[in-house]
Length: 404
Image (tube, rainbow, N blue to C red; front, top):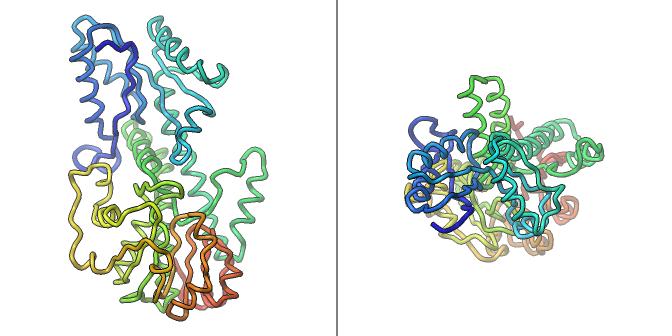
């Protein structure tokens, strides 16, 4: 009630039911926070959006605060965060930019300058950008959409590379040397995950549809479609390589988090890959250095988007539970396995004793590298049949049924 500036960083999950379900952002928590602020405020406030929200959310929040203001003045600013998991503290203290959006009124600009002065204590002034409210709100969605787009673009190329004998790493390096493009976010993989990319793109799609822009909406939908395609393509490659069935075969899954250096499993590609393999009756043994068995079992039991709505968690079926085991040792996970799926680029997976692993596995022994982290040639010398995303296929894989 006494604060001059209030930062609101609440969850804005994808709606799971009702209007816009599966695409629109659920602003329940944001509205609740706004009403709480209105109830306790005793003096003029600057309310700052930190959450990723749809364009024009500030307008809705203004209306709620104004109609419950009791004469108190509120200024709404958009100040989206651009932190990445694993480097959040570094990103906070050394940001690429700080973005502040406000109303183009004297009161709005005064609020912008007030927040700018806070950041100026550690951020150079030329890295603090100011825009109108709607530009700031849209910029966060656009930034995540552009990053995800790059990943889907290189993943689309990875499929073409496999079909033609090109090497996606060489293609990415050549493309990234163009200064107009740059090398970041050009690593082919089994797909992107995390709490932001898919959620924000779906939100962007919904906003486009609501504004009568179906062509634009369809363009951004393709980023998600390619990501889903990449995951299903990976599963199909595993199954087709192993004599077109993985029924009752042990598959070791190394890594479950959506990226290394975090235990976050939200929208991790490992979930869809595991579900795909379970659908073909595989037995899965999972190892991740930071993800607990309880988290993995809950993730595999959830419906899409339920990870952001914990109350809707669903119980794992007894059949599925029996098919999944979680270990705290990579060697235990791979013992007696027919194949290994590398789902997270943990550094330790580069230095495992793969000769020891090979000797403990069923033969032929397969490695399906969804992150391109292992030395495929060294593994082939040991005796493995290796599939690496976007890399030239070895003889065995070429002889297997084609993967659509």
